[in-house]
Length: 276
Ligand code: NAD
Image (cartoon, rainbow, N blue to C red; front, side):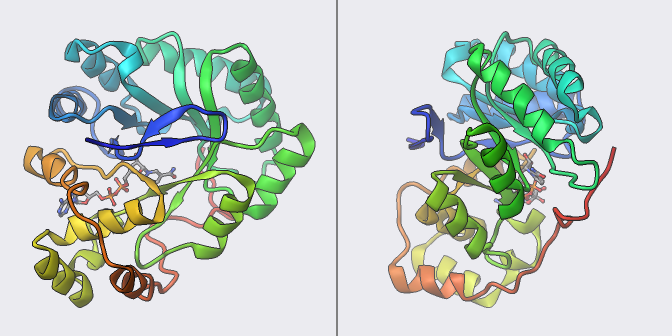
């Protein structure tokens, strides 16, 4: 029911997953992930920095599904940047996730002020070549960061996970990535439940298509070819967020949603953000 996107190394990733940012480790993340897997989700997006990889690992085990049937992404914490510390952090993430490989590992933020993202990328390449990760990518990278890791290593990331929703369409960066063959993962696709869901145009389209505002916004991502993992701990919403593959938006409606862009960030700026 959920389609796959083929990454630039041939690995397939479900276009919809569950994001687990701000879910507390323990019963909250475990029950949300388990519920999503029961409903048919097969892709989980976590991060070492979310502090809930342990709960994700427990839920995956509890689901009884085969490991190879679930796509697991995690991210290198900002505090662990550097070649050796990245390698160490990788082992710690695997242990918490109770797995011996990752489907996708991302550099969470470039933190250009520390100038360590190229070293991290070299560690990622080593693990990828050792077949301990099926695909490697980055998050919150802008063109100059992408250009630099590619120039210094010759290895193009499989994905760039960036903030993207109708109020921040990030079109120039998405087009830049498309030219390089880098898939886009759109974080905070629902603007963290913010204003976009109360936007007049989105509400009118929800009425037109017989869908909810969240489903309209998520479908817009699917039409753009973005990979998404909206977050919810609420079973009805986890289910609602999957209900986006039985309709499509007409081209003028997609263009109208594109027109909502106001370059509005809910999260930090990749050039200046650093939290260790
Ligand atoms: P989101 O846009 O997915 O919004 C989640 C919030 O929207 C929920 O907490 C809830 O309040 C609301 N919501 C969810 N489903 C809804 C529905 N059907 N109707 C109405 N409201 C609904 O926000 P997010 O969690 O920030 O982003 C999704 C995922 O992206 C994260 O969980 C995480 O995995 C990832 N992410 C990555 C980064 C990064 O730097 N790489 C940053 C932020 C998020």
